[in-house]
Image (cartoon, rainbow, N blue to C red; front, side, top):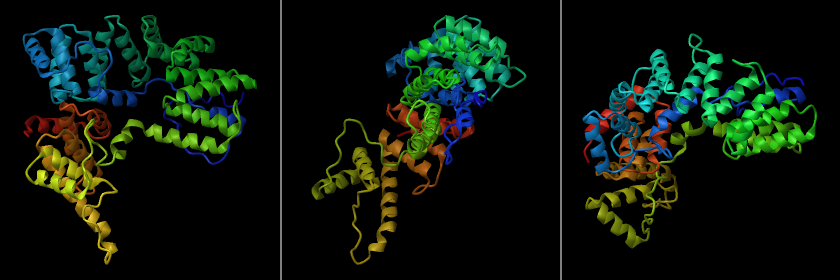
Length: 453
């Protein structure tokens, strides 16, 4: 079938807008295969080390547990050194400190802790806490994989599949994916399926690829669902039922927010393959794919200052008496009142000093002055240790309208909020951290260490 061999890798063609309906062969060529977790996405995942991971052992929260862990690590206990490094990497209690995390990981890795060896491999691969060094990344990932455990085998295979040409070894990557998959690693099974689907490192075998995708797809694995959909498209031979099944699989992956699946589903709607032809629906899917393709990286830029408010805390009373009482508490130095008053001033519908009917053109300047006052209140509340004030202040620094744009200071305030347990700060910090130089992250971490409320 024309065009079916032009399957492209994730990120090369996903999510672009289209205005003309492609013909049959070209439409199928535009379908996108999710080859793997790209190294760029892996770096984003590495930035999100602050996010809690379900089932991760030993990362108990709380000052007492942390003090005990630090004492054990200082005494030379290898597992405690690794776990302390993870705490410092995540920043959900102690302040995030990549340089200190690397020191503890290295001590634990030298004592044979596989998790620490894997972390060092990822750190050198992505340059988060150390200068990027592919050779050292390969060294530590090889050492971790020699343990024969599933995740290090998968990480090493991923590097050998996607790494620079001088270290790339797709044949060995396939062997390592197989070993990891045999140990129950679902992502390894899907990545191995991609190699069979494309004939990279192994002889092309669509039936084998399909077998590898089916169990993960049945369990709802988005990448497997999308890639299995492409197997059905390739084998369709004009059979409408296969296109219908492909559309169902793309839809299931798209429902999980997979941008390339939305793009693929759009191609089917644009051409009426397995679904009723609907170009408006296709265009909507392409737009949605484009937005998702920007993904977590856009989170920090699209979160509005003033949008973060403490969970479980009632909104302030905006009656005349309520506002007067709030202003009195703020002037008396109450950090929570300062935050609430600043937060109110950032809300689009709030005008604490209404414009004059005789001079309606004064509104834009008045809004800017009100936002400046809000920034001053948030700075005072953040300086007193209020976590939501810290997050909204960081968003003002990212926006760069009321305050000068300063990504380093924004990251510092997000780090401090993370350490205080503010629930939205880790994802925002990961989003910002993936877009700014490592030097700014390290400077923010150093400044945060010396910060006092």
